[in-house]
Image (tube, rainbow, N blue to C red; front, side, top):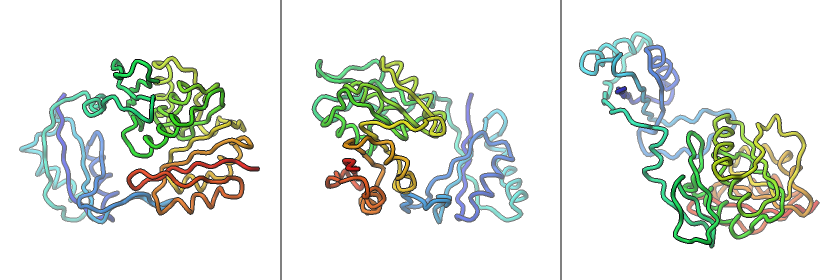
Length: 295
């Protein structure tokens, strides 16, 4: 199958209408990207993340839309749906690809700390004594390339959870859950709100020969653990402070990331009644917080 990518620049208040209009006109998917160079790191709770100048990109089946004849017609239809003039559309034919595996092109074996490696399925690291996590992330976040994931992997390598119970809250691809199990954890529970993340975690646990329990938060129950890792974002971590705090055993450890440097103090304040925090560990603009439960 071949594809046709059609995009348009829009002001922030037009994004929802244009996205819905593309969908109405038969788009198979609609993506929203920054059309300038405006940082948008984390919206406040309840906000929709929209840049001032945004590019809305729609993907069509090229057999259903002719690039030379139908782009002008699509523009007219968009104008009719929106009841307003729209700028010219950018039309780009796309060759068919296995998009679910495109990530492999830039995913190489990576070392975290002294002995932990993350490798694509079918590859091995040069160190025969390495602890290896083989990943095929599929549709879920997490191969170790992002700074926050790397911070967690390096922390796990330096503090292997041997014979400990571990909860990976916001597991994504399951990379941290699998790494914890391979580094000696007695049992690991992975939690995420995204069904694709739960599926990816189960599959990655299976291919690594790891037994990991996987739950949606609503099905998790009241369990607690020696170590809780949460690689999410600052605002959700603050909102989850009571729940995550209760899931850490007394004298257990809490590892939090997905936090920008200027958000670290607010996150620590939400947990400080029950935890003593070590100095933040920084990578790029992100930080990892390590807390010891004292109550």
